[in-house]
Figure 1: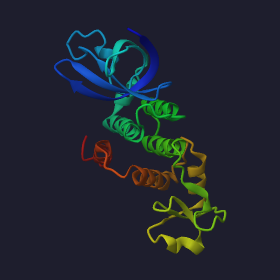
Figure 2: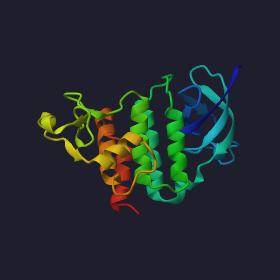
Figure 3: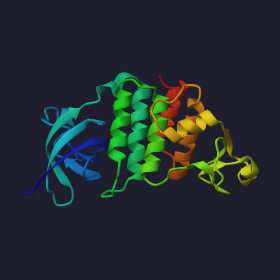
Figure 4: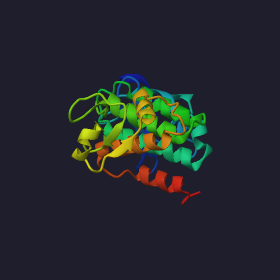
Length: 241
C-alpha cells in the first residue's frame, strides 16, 4: 500500500459510522483533500488529539480505495490561542468554511494555504479579529483571481484616489459614474490605501469601512449563506457569550 507525506490544516470534520471521521485538509502541496481517520472517535484513539480542527499537522497517508487513510500525524502548530474566546473560534470557523466553499478538491490553490495559515496564526496570537478577517477576505479573493478594481474607475478606467465602491460592478467608481450603481458606498483616500495595501496592520480609523467592503465583496463572490457567518455575527453582536 503506497504512503504519502503531506502537511496541512484541518478545516472540516464529519463523523462517519460509530468511530471514524472524514477530515477535509487544506495542504501545502496537494490542495484541498479529504481523508478518513479510522477509529479516531474512540476514547483511547492514538491519533485523536492530533486531528482537531485548525491544527497544522504533518500527515502520513495510506492509499485507500476511495479516500486515503490517516496512518500517522505529527502536530507542527496546534494554534491553541484560537480557543481564547468564542469570537476567535467563530472567526476561525468562518475562515475554514469560506475556504471549503471556494476551493475545489485538486484545485491549484496558489497562495491560499499561506493566507489561511497566516490568518489562523494571527487569531491565535491575539491580533484584532476584524483586521484578520478583512485581510483574509481581500487576500483570498485576490489569490483566486477576484481582486476588486481599486486603482481605476471600473466604467471609464480613470485613476481614482477616492470615490465610491460598487459591489455589483466589482470596484471603484469616480464622481462622474457614481450613478452606474446607486447602491455604491463612499470610500475615502485613507480607506482606499488600506484596501490596496492588503496588510494586516489596518489603521483603526479606517477598519470599519475596510471590513464592510471586504465582507460585502466576499459575500458577492460566494453568493450563499455560511453557517459560520451567522454564528460570527451572533457572537460579535453579543447575542452569544
